[in-house]
Length: 378
Image 1 (cartoon, rainbow, N blue to C red):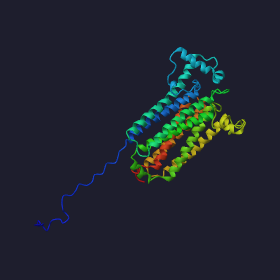
Image 2: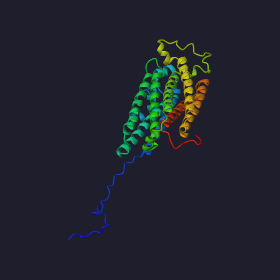
Image 3: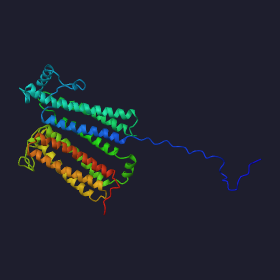
Image 4: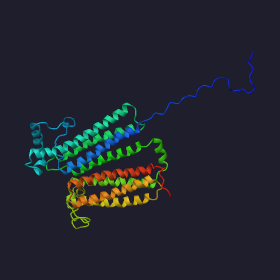
């Protein structure tokens, strides 16, 4: 006989309700840990750029005449080994043209600069490989980031090969320094890697969901200004490498004129005409100055455009960029007027790193604004 039911009993209640299915938690990734690893790479690369600049300014880059990525990690350890390295250098054109009669002790001083520069390159490669393989093996790289992080390593390897391509140009007959255009390519690739790392660190410093939300509030106008500034600073860095490559910064030491002229009369003395853009000290330095003036104008206009934004962080990023631009211009003028001494030249080079990074940061602030940072009264 069927059991009677109360009129108040829920008709649909035929038995215990099955438990709701538990969805697996979304995987989490150590974005900040990866950002810290990339920040270490960034710092090492800045040191690499500084030591590279010192290596160039002290004419040390050709002291090691072979490229031995593995065995070259160990420096000479006894008198015979030092003498063998010195003999290789004495067979180079630079020794005959610039350092004939150099003592082995003087040779050691330039050798250590180049050896240190190469060691930093090896250290960067080791830190990249260790970090990448660690996060890859633990499956902790966020979706879409593996090609980006792998690409940094590939660029680093290409940079090492370009470094030797640059050095080999200075070992050819009739040369006592590396080819300026190869130096420019070498420094340009370094800044490409530096810029990518800076951008990745900025992105990894915030959750992906927050970035997707922030992108909807992006400032298209300031993004375009930021893109133009990134391109101009990069061009200026490459021109600066050309200036350093032929010591053009020591040829014209007055400002704002050049040898008392608005435009150097020797600007097109070389033939063929196109070679003046690479090897003529007057034209190379003039172009470097010209892009600096253009940078100041564009930087100031971008800063003024940012004043209309209600985002405090965005305005602050463009203000920091303009402040560093002013410092960099002052350093450039001082470097020229003092005939490019070692200290000012390195400060000017490091200033380029700081300016490039701050320009990238300003563009990032325009693309991914922090919406909660709203100025009062606006």
